[in-house]
Length: 160
Image 1 (cartoon, rainbow, N blue to C red):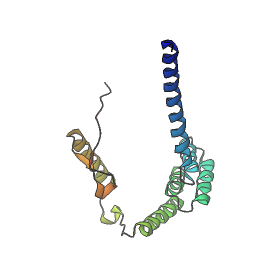
Image 2 (cartoon, rainbow, N blue to C red; image 1 turned 90 degrees about the vertical axis):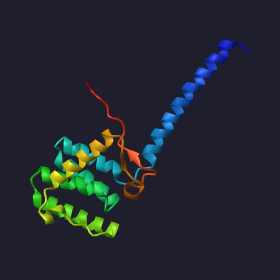
Image 3 (tube, rainbow, N blue to C red; image 1 turned 30 degrees about the horizontal axis):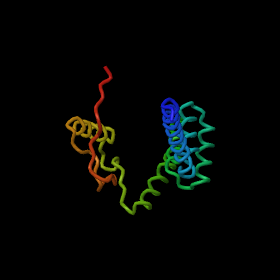
Image 4 (tube, helix red, strand yellow; image 1 turned 180 degrees about the horizontal axis):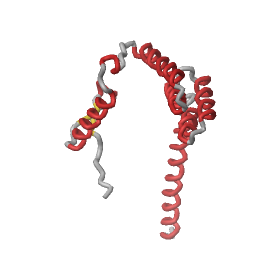
């Protein structure tokens, strides 16, 4: 057998394998999406473009497909906040909290009830996770996030 033909055949098979796995991964990522996820992404894009009516329409379509789609409810509330329609946003967020209480069968209390600044607590939590990541210590555990084993925060990359 001619070695050049064999070499060309191997190269073609490698390229074909790469292309087929790429196509398989893309098709699989679109086929396994929950109902309403696409419309929720559209809502998010329209929100960023300040096309609020189109964002609400997309969220409503997602909610028709999956009535309690958390992303769609959240996107709707963000649209209302962006439009300074705070009562409607509060209604959406209250519904989301009630839904999460039912879903988890847990008591959920907002931090505001304790007169604590939630933004401050969030910043402290991210600082804590950043230090643990820097020290290469675990930040996610099977008991809290259902990862298979405790994991670190990944690698710190310098952009300069």
